[in-house]
Length: 569
Image 1 (tube, rainbow, N blue to C red):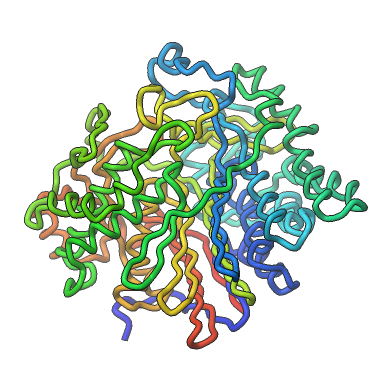
Image 2: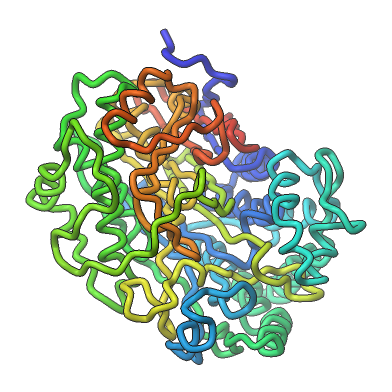
């Protein structure tokens, strides 16, 4: 018997399954699977399509961190995160922008997503770039129906979209925000992607690898690179042709820990992934057994565990190429025990828990608005194929605080907004350094040998939503869709990862389907409870695929909080 009624069923199939942040992206990936492509081919097709279908949340020229688990047991991550330009003056934001991260070209880092998709195809795919880009090109050129979240997002940022005429031309066609159901077209973006495919076809006679290399060169060395860097220079930014020509996403190992017989895998501390593991381990140390789902005790444990892990994110996480991140220490039994020991089960910690391993940092001033300002960005795709390969990716980057490169439809990654303007901060700016990314695809190898790629948009809410859904499935035994639709909470007791890095000590947002008595008890413990609607996109949009070796089925669920859908066959 389900505890929570669901609006959708769990989708199951014997061969393959996909869940993605937009229904057309799920369909694009599913078509690839049905045509014989593997999880990597399908994931890249869906991920690229998300940059077209959710252009307010994801950019074709943004970030695309990817995790791949192969049927032979090998697992790797493709960071898919660009770095600051080599010519960036480290003190430019402190000296010229009052310690703020300005909108526009100066927050741009090297666009990583095209490289990440192509590297994934080169390393583990079977299809051409043209094969996986066909759906994205169609959706950009022919258009698609504006849906509620896209209409809401554009309307909320109408003033910002008007800042640049080329942004307004795309996002405010006819001089106004599009209405739900209107066709949304991105003709320039279709031409840019078609150019990459055309360059691939020119090299097709030399083999698949040469074709993929030609598509890559079209973006990073060819006409698109020239248009990008010319425009950025004209606007006072720092990206150069050399920055683009030299760029390749780093291939990095996963960070993994065993938990109750499962292996939970996240990306490295260049993103917030390890904080998900740390929060899980702290919660386990505090004690999960015997706690009723979404009871006050359970939500207090989850919230306080997340506070400890996200404090360590603030104090320590950075690009590992630029500074040591003590991941092993943070995930060690001793540190987890120390974080758990600092939790008072009767009283919420009022803010960011203190550093244990040293390296504290100055915090921004407290903010007391009703709810934090949230940047809607990011999407997600999970795939498992018939051969036992799994794919998990969290493409991202919005379009309202950076300009479109005129004539291309491309919004170059503004992910610099997740670096601190002060170079002295662990995640401070530096030439060649990557910002500390919120998008963090994850995966579980279950104790019975199943695979569970999962992830979500939501900025700082990402690992919070992921932790709750993972526990719903693996601890409480919920079906995938029930686990996704169950009500959630989110803490804001730490500086935001996004400029202007707001800080809301004690703040706990709660979907109001959680009973009022539970909310009152949380408030009595010192949580500053702020009700969300019963169901809100602010709580993330978790997508999950779970393979079950015992039944031979792949189960998939998608979050109705956003236009996500799952398919299986």
